[in-house]
Image (cartoon, rainbow, N blue to C red; front, side, top):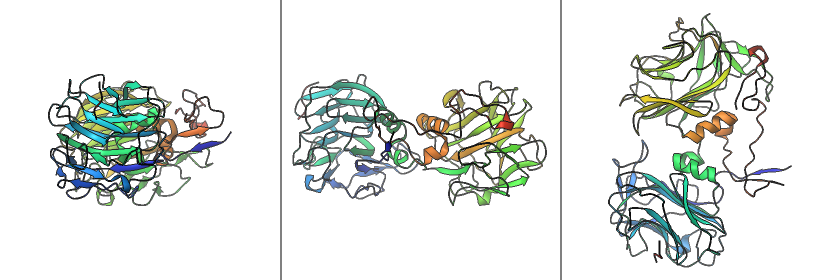
Length: 494
């Protein structure tokens, strides 16, 4: 059986982040399709923005246009083209109720995404008459991921990664010489969108359902560059040595404080696999000055969002410390009760996990969505569990970042094993965390979200995951620690 994997950016025709301070929108270098502002440069908003960085384009009286002649040969709807499928969408933030002429993405006469004139519903159209609308209203003053997909037979509208309505009467995509436009209908600048756009994208293929969901949660930046925001990765795979190696240069190196021996286990690379932590002086540390810029809790600047996690195997219910950075963050096992992970900010317990059994491998992830709602959440074995309010600011400090103990003495030493630890300075999407749980961080960094085609597969485009020999099938136990066992597992618009 031959497995063919397309990279996630396969058939990407254009991606416009709309986060520049001024001037022409850039597509981040994935291709050379730049859009020109009409009639003026699109204003940028640094207050209405979807992500913690950059900005969003304000399209109240402006749009962005690409002449048909400048579009890539396979761009959907290009004059003389023969596109068999496509996906297009963006994050949109309507500023006022839909007037019936609020165009979001348009290739006039070919396809259209717009904010509807009835019920404030994001709607779409393909060809001259096939129009569909979202199942529910989309409020003004909020970000929504809106996308359209045509697979050659079905034209569907997606909101927040959920398929809305669809039509199957379409037999072909109209190709014409009209320009491609963001935030307006045409190069004359009619039917402007009263609102904001961020991370617009166009593919000349139909993304899979899972890709549509991922796009809605993460946006193209992380979809095409999953490693974005990764500032520490510690596989714990060395047989010996004084430094835990990370995936690539520039990430956070952890030095041994005492000795962190390795648990030897059979694994596909044939190397040792997990760090062993005990009551004897054994933890890992990194001085604040050695942490890379943007590291969560670094003294030079606080992170707005973050995600931290690892595979953990606790030998005992005794209270221990897994991660510690002064008073900024502390993840404890056994606090406030045996079997629980407690998350502390400024030495205040704000979040407790569901009970977890000892002497079993668990994938423990904590995510803080400070940009959205100051919420901290536990994701255990890929499933979202407890959540609770954090604090509006994520304060950094100059103390060491510690793994496996509360202090370098150490106090509250971790008693057990750790593997595949990581930290991001952004809030990973649910599906990203599930991907790390199911396939490991290496699978995530080397993306596997493409459209997989497998010979003999029951459905075209079905993605068959790569086998992961390091981890048994989810739910399968392979013995105790000594054996290396663990689990992972509405009417025409033209």
